[in-house]
Length: 44
Image (tube, rainbow, N blue to C red):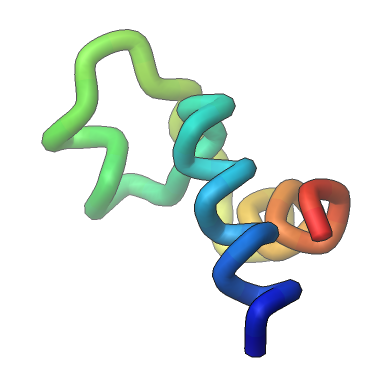
């Protein structure tokens, strides 16, 4: 569970997020679910 939280935090901090987050964040890079999952895994 800690790795998932770490991965989510890293992806969101990098502003690589899905539409629902991107519409609430300035300067976010909007990606699809698969790319977001890849970003989360990359930050684990």
